[in-house]
Image 1 (cartoon, rainbow, N blue to C red):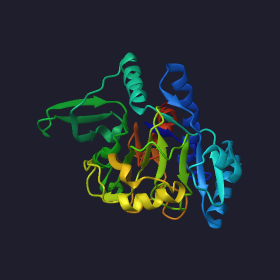
Image 2 (cartoon, rainbow, N blue to C red):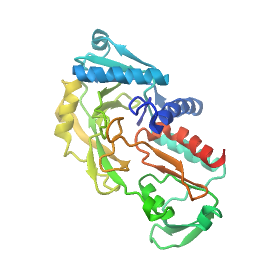
Image 3 (cartoon, helix red, strand yellow):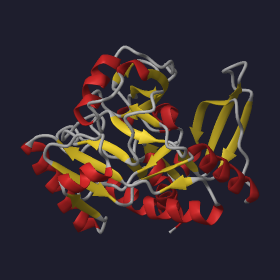
Image 4 (cartoon, one colour):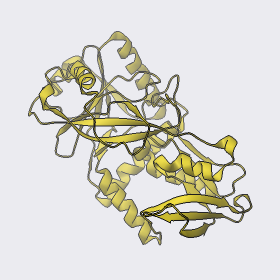
Length: 333
């Protein structure tokens, strides 16, 4: 289960903002049309200090300028709606935030691609790419099997879209000259399951983010059955394959959770699963401010028919359909 983001954190003119806002609408429409499990849970961003309250006002102002609905909720109404949630200064509600069954979404996309004549080649490692006449005659893509990284198969494509996730920097470096190479960085985030029946919440609860922060803070999310989950924490790692959930940062996570859910039973929290966020810098931020790193979605100069999609971290899933539409426009319009 993943969050459908509204696009509140990424500044007025970033790709993350424009693609998330558009992707939000497209994703809800697709889920409703194709019966992909989802729910418009709404989300509260909660402020505990006057400084955080001021930042909420800035988020609300940005959302209003983007046409994204948000509203302030009084502390009295907040206590009535979510009696277990502690709020000292302010609550900003995001009406268009929700959750989606991400696996069902991907299954739909997989099926839709194949219905249109596409193929998905699993366990096929791209080992090198040869631009033919700078891409004017296409790209020769060499592929190794899962048993070997040797070039066992080669195919030629007229266009090349690099949407390889954690492998995107490696693909970039196969296609572009050395002075345009990229170095990947990885942030692991562990989520924690919660087994106690109380305290509860009926919507997503996020702390007020810090400008330029690497993540959005340790927040409360839900699945479609209403079960609580908390995370993600932040751990810089050396490999995209480091997918073992870690309890290393659980004490710090409990401290953050307790600020908005003080009755949390710390003994009911256990590491559940983790994911890796692709970063393009050693301290690349997800929230607008110093260190903010935007999506890179661009048609590369000197490489005809090549589009790069780099650093597609959160809100990448929400933005996915809008990114695809943008890529199509870069290639064919």
